[in-house]
Image 1 (cartoon, rainbow, N blue to C red):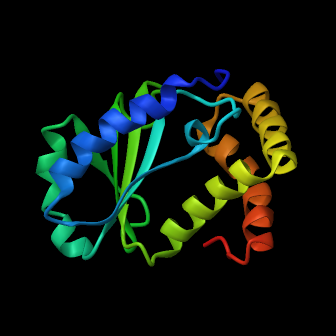
Image 2: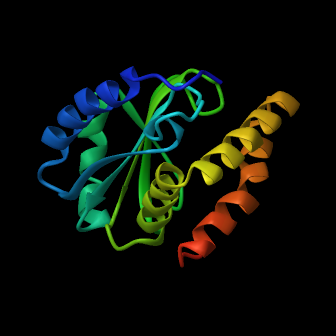
Length: 167
């Protein structure tokens, strides 16, 4: 994990501009920075994580080859609710640089990701607790699935306090 960098929002703005142009035919709600690199002060793996709103997932599947031209590869993740893409090395290789999820702005995924990000940004104690948990989990294992699962209870509790149930 790396300490927070003020360069991360700049990386996001450059990539978001490219994505917004590419996604224009399907886009509603814009491209948003989510994940740890979106939270000032939070240590993170250097993966720029984004979510973009689309009106219709079926029609948005037409964006798969368009995003492919920008270096994004499609991967399944909640296929009933989102299209997921990554840029850089393959999933699980530790060399991904960007992740993107396309989903409807009224989806559970959209609400979860933006609410959690906003909760971390708004509450220093929540941020400190999450950072301590991430460091502990990262030190204990290189297993990404175990790391992700280890954060689930914390994320769920934060979301519940905000009135959102984790799917």
